[in-house]
Length: 85
Image (cartoon, rainbow, N blue to C red; front, side, top):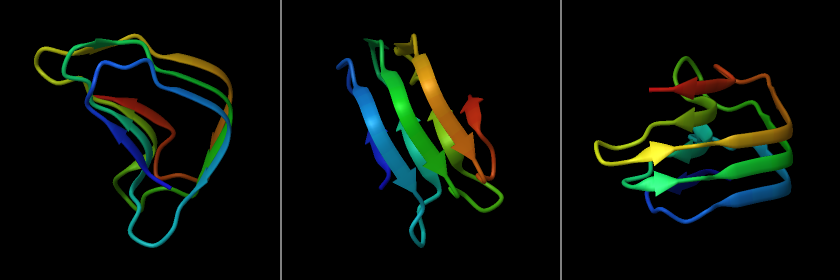
């Protein structure tokens, strides 16, 4: 499962398990185009990416911002864990 968002909704991932399938570079990618407050809790993200991609990518667009809350999140076996760009 790969989750991508560009809207300003308050996304909440609760008690989720995200594991890579073939061709899935990123578990959760936040790329908001306005102010957003996504949160992730009680979630495991594993085996995402191969050289690029990874667990969680936070990449606000030019007019966007992200105030991300992480609580009891496990990110393991990924190309990288949590990245901002």
